[in-house]
Amino acid sequence: MWEIIGTVLGVIGVGLMIRQQLWGWPVGLVQVGIYAWVFYGAKLYSDTILQFFFFMIQVYGWWHWSRRSTPGSSPQEALPVTQLSPMARAGWVAVGAGLTVVWGWGMHRLTDATLPWWDAFILIFSLIAQWLQARKNLECWLGWLLVNTVAVGVYWVKDLRLTSGLYLIFWLMSLWGWREWRQALKNSA
Image (cartoon, rainbow, N blue to C red; front, side, top):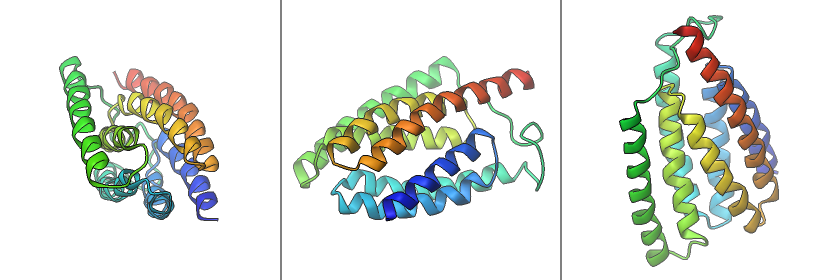
């Protein structure tokens, strides 16, 4: 039941993010709360912890985006989509890879986590993608494409079929988000 509710809210929340709607943030807050419970039950501890970090970043994103938005404002009047420099992109990838190794090793050695390395990748690169989304950087969608690719397989193996399906939908929505935000970036230039 909770997985179904989280799945529905996840699709709604990402759809709102693609459209650059402020309501995506409160929907996301409820969704990550639900998924913290689902992942804890599946012993995916990194994903459980991830939901708590998501919650904090979602609060920040809601605040950051709302500083420029007013009720009824169009995405063009709101906080603009930006793009990272090539050096910043490389930096985020390097930091993500390093932290994935450290976190995966810790989960492998200190817990009974299943799939600790893949779970660590999902944790670290989701945090990076979520942060970039809160900052309204176009590259967040590339991060989500990577994360969602790995997540589909991990959740399928863990017999979280609805969640795996949700992340397949998220993968497709990430392509849509990339296209929409890239167009918004071009329109603002």
